[in-house]
Image 1: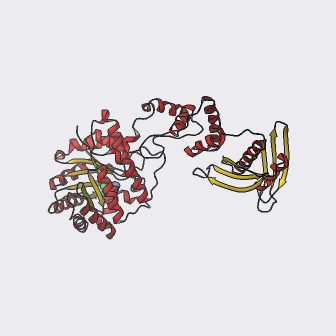
Image 2: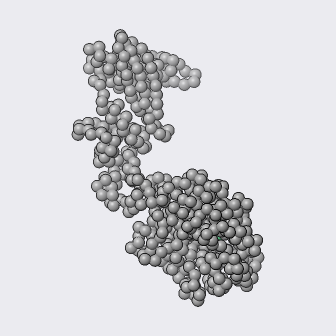
Image 3: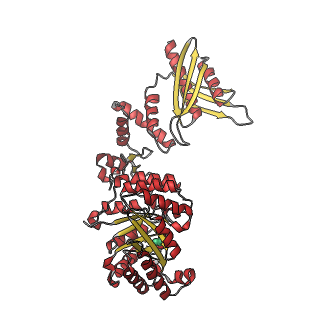
Length: 502
Ligand code: KIV
Ligand code: ZN
């Protein structure tokens, strides 16, 4: 099966993302990971742009020995000399020369006529050819160039010695059918095109970079330029992981291979995000944190029965250990039971029902239910002691300029009782009101509160040690409302003390 060459430009175009800037050492760390990922070519930088970029390309070039290292240059002697110097120690070097061919770029940016552009392009490739064999040429803004002129430039640079012709959709203007047609037309209108590898480089301004690249593959492109996480100038470049996984998952449709070791995708994505500071959106295809997460009960049930019901790729294919079933308010019994089993709880059917009810109550208050929440539900709620006193409600009033007061309503087999109290704080006020109702003067020996899960909506677990008449009892309760947790933990201890006194 024929192969699609993966040209990674994370270190060059990716680094052009606003806000992303990489030190030479960081570029090397990333280049080493890109090599493990199995990309065919690493575009390491634009050496003339800054001394930092020059150093980074030198460092990557001398350290990476299995992968082609590419450096970018304009069709200017100084650029090409600097890039060639930076590539000096590369085992497999490539020079990438670009020159704009669209009317708008030639007229306003370069202020040159068509013939001048044609001559410069051909001169630059010939000049580079004196020093290097592997030359890629990009007619910048190709997708907005006049096709006839574009064909002439491509033919001329191939004659001058270019070995790869890259067609950039520089401003992300193309749409898939049109871009595919452009590639097909280049193949049929440039007489010497079969001497080179045809490549594409798509930007994502209309969110079409991956679609345009895939359409190009269908129409004859054999090299794709892309970046990890799709980072790059403005809206970014075609995302490497999306292209690779599309080609792999739909091999039936595309009929190509890549040499990417897809098991390294997730790790590479994480590293790129860490080093560039560019966070991956949660719903990003392939590497977003939700890409393999199933929230709806119907989907969770389906995935647990047979993962292919809702998963077209296995999480392991990109290096994730498993799909994450995110428990939340849409989760059903099946997913809940499965998670309990994984956490080592083997509950009887009646306990399971009860735990599931607590889980649903919590899920109404809290968006994501973590494993620790479930453990707290089982430990704190299923193993409840006999409840002499049960909380009906509490109300507190507290603030910077008010005396904290609490009203508590409790129920016992003798009826419903109501009391109010003030205190040193809302918790103290609640405890005093409870003491009035239960007529047990609990001495609070210890009070602690701990967030047991992450996030602002974390469960707070309160632990109290209460002493009465020489007995000590521990009470625990977890809730997203810390006052509720405090009240219920105290009542839990009081009920234990009552059992001990009986
Ligand atoms: O987007 C672009 O046109 C480029 C070229 C340098 C290939 O990045
Ligand atoms: Zn680009």
